[in-house]
Length: 307
Image (spheres, rainbow, N blue to C red):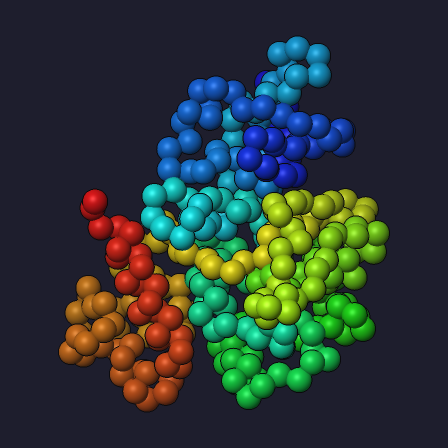
């Protein structure tokens, strides 16, 4: 029976795995396994547990995948033809944004939340750089997600504020960190796990956005085998994929669905008797969240349309 290894990193032509016993090495993909990837950019992802063979001493070959418990998906390019599994088998997603520098974008927060719900990865929102003054729009945004019931952590990687809660979230879990460049993902991991020393960067003076310092998702084992942390590249754009447009509503937990509208196939646009548009009119569903829903639905419908 083949041994099972853990995928630590996936580059364009290289897969790094941890073998039973802790040895780390490169692995290749068996030909028929690679050809069967279909719409996937790569058949394996960071966090996967893979079956391996060793046909010759020192030659490690990936022969197959163990079943996944969760995935975080995105298109290879914002578009519709191939998907990329950023991370597999994560128990939790820590979505890191900043109070300022860069200011958080509500649309990107919602995209990542929808991707987490669709991929069965429970999310936690972290707003880092709490030492910086947030503008009124950002403060209202943070309060919105708190009111929706998401756990929100306000942190500062430099001072250590809020890091204790992040450390508690990591214990005995496989946790993926995701968010825009410059928000402080790698800095928070470095603070929570002394000695890891992931690369960190500064905000670009020209664009006001973060520079990419993590170029590929990478998995780090926590001290004492207490779990794993997965750092991902900074996200500037994040398309949604492999979500049925008719089921998008289920990834907005506050929406009064399903079966609350007059029509079972309600798209929550301008249909009569729509419970969602009524909730928006009554301010029990925020307009920004509803606008995110409309934007995402159009994108998913376009992606699902035949060529």
